[in-house]
Length: 508
Image 1 (cartoon, rainbow, N blue to C red):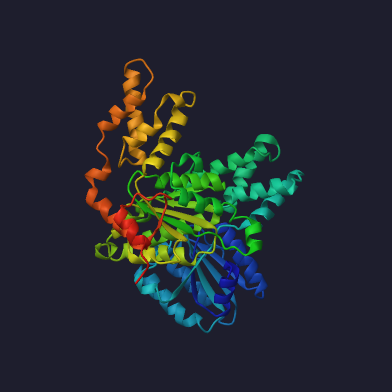
Image 2: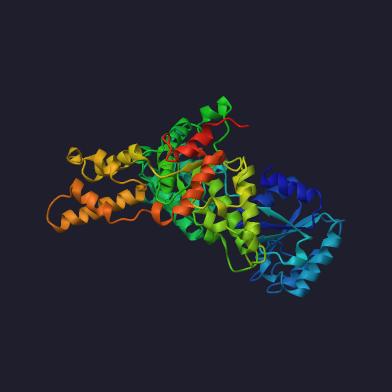
């Protein structure tokens, strides 16, 4: 259901107090005014702490700086007079015992009257004693149709008639911004050129990056990595390439659902984060990076509010890729954390969204320690697939060396013995191979010459790979993958021959 449908249903059902969480106060009040008119010209009364009631000349300025008196006006109106009372920033007064008690009293009275109280707040903060009398709604950011109507209105005002392709590009780039932000950034572009131009899309995207940074929850991550930059992981790359067009309208007409996401589990430094960036670049979708730790705030209810805000922004920017790095560290052992259940509630909201989301947000989560993840995270339906990313074998190490050396020394690639390098670096991860190359470059640079194969091997000999320092943990991961809990990202598995035989044996 849309917000209008939800709100109208609550009003008709005589829900006395409705709490709407939004940062778009003006747009919400306009939507409520239109709905009040459609419901038989209900009266709309707007109050704020500084100016009191506004809009009605008989009550102008009433209850200025007095939230309790603002509630008393509800009782002064005739019981049969239908009305909607909008209270701005009223969440700040809910902890006051007199205000709380008055709201609970009004909740009883208004059940039999055609009146509704609407509390507008940029965040969700409800005291425990009011949870039963408040009904919560979220006012979503403008959808594509609303944005298109606003863009067309602005362009008609300056006499510009864009073609459909350019208009769709502008609308898509504005998704995830509030209507007021859209007006400001388009006005800025029009003031610069006198009209909207294709280059203004970058101006809109920069505004979007600024807004996302201001949330302090998500980062708008620029990507330049390609699928070809990933050495090895052929099974995973094939899986991704098959889904390259799954966000198109042609895929919807074919009947394909939107891809949900991937959980990449494996050893550190094996290319899980690189894969997330390459997916975004290859599918031409914006990449949002979520630091789960930023979801948690110090105030009661703040963490849950931030989680909902993160979901709202990600869905408004859809289609997009949401990258959650090292998700195992965020939700490990949440049952035993002494935070009053905050982590548990955030986790519950997050996995429920993963299972039920219909928006084209492709979630790429990475994890190093599968034992730390709650079992609920691994249930089918949260992600399309779980891939195990192990250490590269010799053939894959050769591909990784080729990728890096093609970037570092594209004209001298033939001077390096890549087969020898791959053979002499067993148990090296992709990150460790890259570090060996960097160290070899330091060796060559310090001696005023180019680095050689021998320099790379010397640098590699000084590196103790993680496969040796964390042998037990890596063995646990390999055993978990061998039990058939995940698909192998590599076509040529690095699992031991014993494990491969276990996988090939039929089930008894």
